Image 1 (cartoon, rainbow, N blue to C red):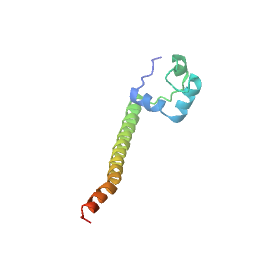
Image 2 (image 1 turned 135 degrees about the horizontal axis):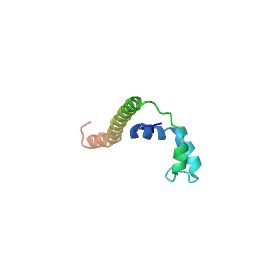
Image 3 (image 1 turned 60 degrees about the horizontal axis):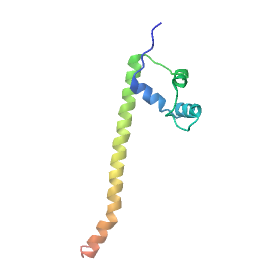
Image 4 (image 1 turned 45 degrees about the vertical axis):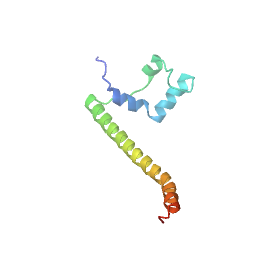
Length: 98
């Protein structure tokens, strides 16, 4: 029997699932997952698809997370522009440009 191969990106996304994090936090006794022991990790049921599927899933999730990051950056830039708008309007009004 061979040891299954787990892709790190697949495992990272799996460990970020809310139900998995909650389970690990409840076992840690500290309210975080930073002190999880190896035994708790070994006991964690991991649905392990074949390696090519793990790679495909991890790639899709990475792409989606990058898209979320780009969208978030665009929204933050728009919000920054909106927040600067009143100051720019006041400056134009005091300069007699309106």
